[in-house]
Length: 546
Image (cartoon, rainbow, N blue to C red; front, top):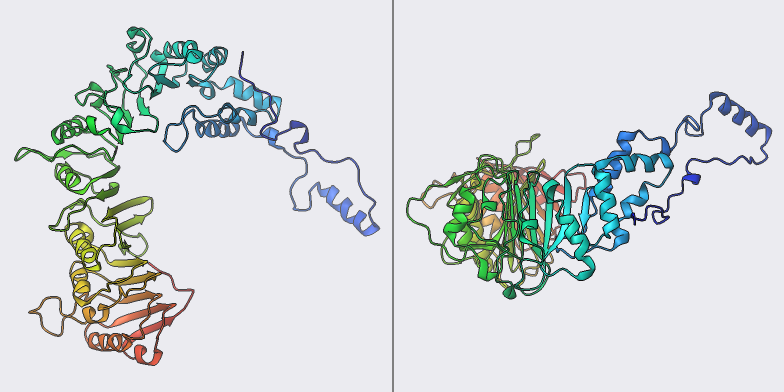
């Protein structure tokens, strides 16, 4: 039986598209004249030609683009990458309903082979045959099970897998703990796959401790394979699947399947053309590396996303050589407080805006999390450190921040934004701020925002800014010598107003502040502050921030 392709689910009715009523209400003479003039020009009230087109007359290429985009957003697996399988049938077929606006739309859809390339075990045999026929030899996208298949799906499962030779992407949902192969004859899984470019192996939600057996199906060779994703499962780390990849995504490896550091090194060495690398809670089980091991160079890598133990990531990072324009997201836990740990690539230049040339680093500090972020024109670089389950001291947060900036190219940023969230207890002090400003000698813009803070992260800030860069420096020199603009948000400066005034007076002769911007601040004394700065702005909504 072919799929149900006649439905009102989408709420479309071709009879109602762009129809106008023949009945016209009585009009006054003036209205009649206005109407006659409009009819003479054949334009509607908005000046558009009346009845010149309707939705059913959209060009074929535009319609097919719409259909294709709708279909691509709907997969048998849910879009949250949790691999709930299958999705309800009405969701899977919802894109089809959109093609029912009129006969022309329907004929275009039926004749466009790429729309009918998605096969899954939840289809009936008749529906699968219909899709296979309509796809007319176009490479397929297959969603299937690996493991003991329910009898109701066994026939369509077998039928779909016989199309592996013309499959471009396959997602295999591993089911039944300990079962990684099903009842199909081995030759079905070992067919030649000249078109296969992408493989995803995934297990559903559940305890990772039960899944201790590697996936053994579809081990290749696959000459066109360029992308591999492993979710809650693993394969033999010496597999030929892990060679020559452009995209590698490994997520939530079971503890029994974690590779060694040298196995991870071998995997990355075998994929020098990588463009995207994702290792999320998929860290090596150890940190051993032999001395003088060569670094792995990735000239084409444009994105990597990491989530793992900080110490293990630091070792793995030391083995990699990355391009200067790479985007990255790094999430680390178990960050050591006793010694500096390099978790940010050293050689990457900071991102800068094209219109000002400023390079802004945003620092977010909560009692348990420290985050650093740069994002500009489609590029992003972020580091998130989970520091503990209880509040970390302000001193430790500042020290770790200073170590990270000092060990990376972020020491060259020209703008620094601090955002403190929900801090209570310990306040900052002069030495904490001195350590931060010593790491960013080119700083020109400084911004600080406080949100729901009982403590005073701003404490010690004015004293630090009027301190010399080093203990033996002349009194004429100051930290952040290029600082010209400072913004404070939600800061109570009533107790430090005189310290800020003295700071600006001290710097005025050699490194004066051009602008001070105060937004929702308390204790502001305008006359006291504006004496030794270029301009003072208080609660101005038209100020443009970095």
